[in-house]
Length: 175
Image (cartoon, rainbow, N blue to C red; front, top):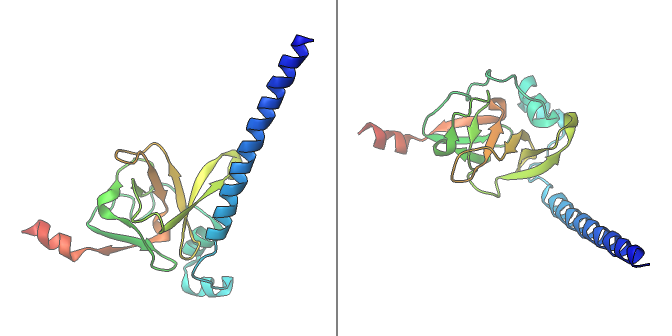
């Protein structure tokens, strides 16, 4: 009889942990769903008119450029990296680093409000997708194998971002 009581208690404990975990996951998803409403609302036709086919594939259809082919992969200048879809400021040059992964990598975002993180279970993997908080455009993925101080590696498609040189910092460095 004691054996059955112990087994029952263990099962109840496991179920309680599972139920609380499921509740927390559902709460996180509810928060994500309320945040996922983008500020830029364009039709797919409008997106196709303003984006190149490659930009559309990555930003709107969650495509990926081939590793090592993006124009910002080995680009290291002072300046800002903005969303190609809407111009939202995403990253700064001082957080960019060479990760040898074939895509531009940053260890931090300009602000946590600039992006949204979404669980991605495509291709039999569990990853964290990075999207623009302003237009919902797919940017890339974030991994927890980056350098200090964050330990994060935002692996971003070059085609999903644009660069604007920071002339103020460049002038200071040239002096």
